[in-house]
Image (tube, rainbow, N blue to C red):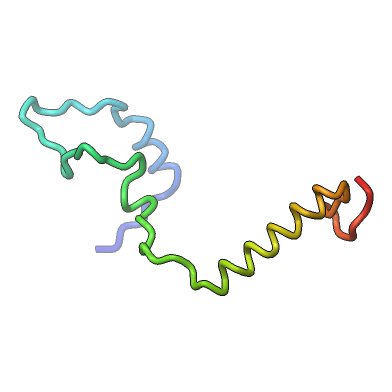
Length: 86
């Protein structure tokens, strides 16, 4: 039963749909909101795995960021490639 729906038909259905559906007074949410409800649902942006980056990656990132900050603090510019006076 493979039915193909064109983009035009989908657009018509979307425009004909009610922006605010009529819900029953006894309707309950699929997932009740908790006191610590996230701003985005899990299917859109799942939580991180909960593990930190390995130590060597963090050290390399800190060295790179620190070097850029020191170069900028010295009055030099590294935004567009080679170090120049900014």
